Length: 327
Length: 269
Image (cartoon, rainbow over all chains, first blue to last red; front, side, top):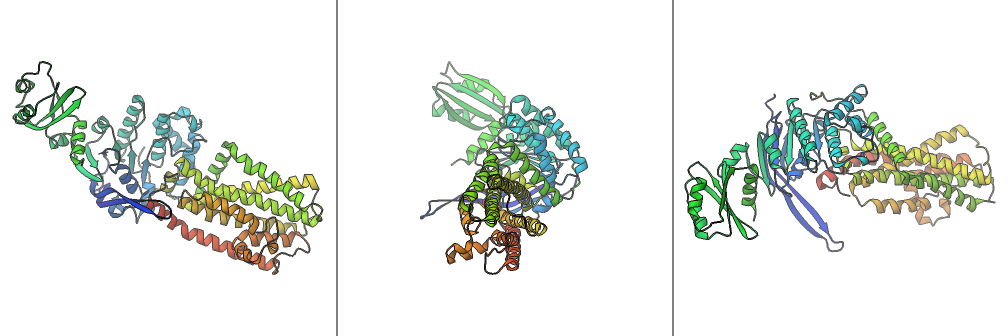
């Protein structure tokens, strides 16, 4: 393992401009990244969570040399993504996924042959390398079928096969399991883990909390172009108020009842949400001082009251962090 | 799978890979039958109808003109569409992200289109041969073949430059559509440039194939009078304009790439 961070980002911004109209042009500006700082250590999986439009794909595209930043610097393997893109491109892989990005009218093997040549994989190694990645993603039996006959999951696997064909040192995976059935998603996660054991640094963006929790020792949450939190899953739980959560449901609560819950010992946060005729109070607990029985005792006059205790999930953490950022 | 040492990217291999892919996509897509097979037949028949009865030398003129129209259509459309298709398929991003400079990918596509354009020219020849009989023997067959190959190079030079426009923006189709007909008329494919209004001549002379085709006609048709300057000035003009096109293409491709990376529109279609 080297001492150079796999990824180092300082003050990164990216503004998109779009123009409308012909004679009277209207220019609108969107700030996709707003002064982002980030360091990722090598040979690990780093997870990036964030809602749609948070700037995750913009960041991935800048780091993979497909987009220029507006200001700031981004280094991958210690090399600048703008000035040294030619050095970086053979050393990084990118999996954007989705239905597009492949030559659908030809077969998977020919797709991979084309990219193997663009990556300079030696001719005597090419076929072996293609067989290796096809087997690794589980497409060895469909290698000679046209890609247009592939299911969404198979296309996703082919995207990944192309991303690892040249054996990159850093692999950017942008929502790699989106649209996959549970079995394919599980296989993909297994593959991602095995890549790390081969020494690859994985930069993973995902919407799926359980996926991030399962794969990533470290997670950053992104919202509106900024990193709003970064820690281990346990660290993030503490950040939003603890790793225990109580949920109390009834047909409406009065404000004084919610205040009373808020003042119970160890309560760090109370969120009230309406579900049709019912209201759910989500109570985040910092310690073991408060029990479900105490919550029931604080809410008398609700015979229908249901209280349950669970571990604070990464989804709770994510929603808390993203909602704090909301206007 | 361990991470690999970074291999040297052979630009020749990358160009060959791009050419191979273009061929595979061509074979897999029946829509290409129209420009590659049917259009040359139409061009050949139109040329025959226009020039029949004008003498055997005009037959050669017609074959060269219709063949050039066919080759031009293939080169321009093929080169543009190759990049346009990369946009449509979403493959422009992973291709640009690879270590191969994109100009070599374009070169491969253009070379394939030149080869398929050559097949179109061959079809034109066969059509005219079938309906009007064989044209007169060429006075200098070897020189003709060498010059013909050079004509293909001039077409490739124009094709590469047009491809840069497709990388630049998804709205390049209009350049392609306008360019095709301007070229047909402006370069004297079918009609001699000299019969066009004088103000059109400078436009015609901007295209390398105008010069190259005129040189080819000087070589193939005894007594041909095209530009007032003759075969050698034509050849010189063709070489000079081709060098300029290739130099401009080489210079602007990196800038075009930086522009699209700055705009972030590589995945737009």
